Each structure stands twice: as structure tokens, then as C-alpha cells.
Length: 127
Image 1 (cartoon, rainbow, N blue to C red):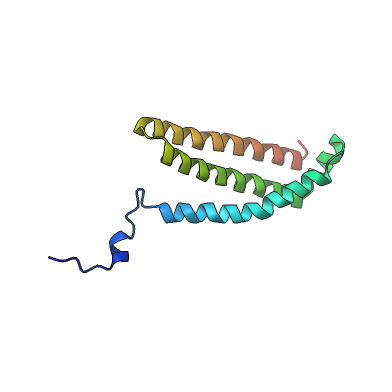
Image 2 (image 1 turned 180 degrees about the vertical axis):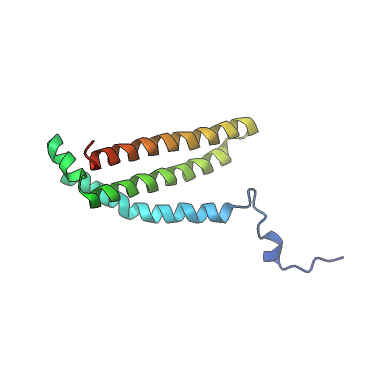
């Protein structure tokens, strides 16, 4: 009995985790977003160079700057998580060690992201 499906039909959805395309696109979208967001961040750091602590806090209380800084953090952390996940999946071979490394990646990214977001929100609201 011959298979009547097209070659595309045979391979569709047969990746190792069945989510490779979605992961690929998420990584690419965050990479494109990071081009603009990291450019903003570099300009912000250069413009605040030599400022006093009070001037820095006053600048970060600006809602537009705070929102953009939060976007830098969230996009950067998520992109880092996705990239490290690919590296772990490709180069860690033992199933147990791979599971531990993937969990550590998630917890590390969550901790860094939440801590950074908390800091920006605290500064923005005058805490």
C-alpha cells in the first residue's frame, strides 16, 4: 500500500518537539525587536553618562522611558531564554541533565527578569 500524502504532508509536525517552527519565529521576532530596543538602551546609557543619581532617577521616572526599559528587559530576557534553550537541547545529551539545565534556564531567566522589572517599577513609582 503506497502513501498518498505529499512530501510536505509527510514531514509536517514531525519535529523532535513538534514546536520547532514556533520557537524559531519567536526567536526571530525577539531578535528584530531587540535591534530597536537595545539601540534605544545604548542611546539612553550614553545620554545619561555623567549624570548624578538624582538625575538618573528623574529620567527613569518618565513613563515612556520606563515602559521602553521594561520592553528591553522583557524582550531581552525572553530572547536569552529561547537561545539558551536551543543550546541546552543541542549540546546537553543526558536526559536528566538536560531536564535540570532547562529548568535552571527557566528559573534563572524568571529571577533575573522579575528582579529587573521590580527595580524599574520601583524607580518609576518613586519607591
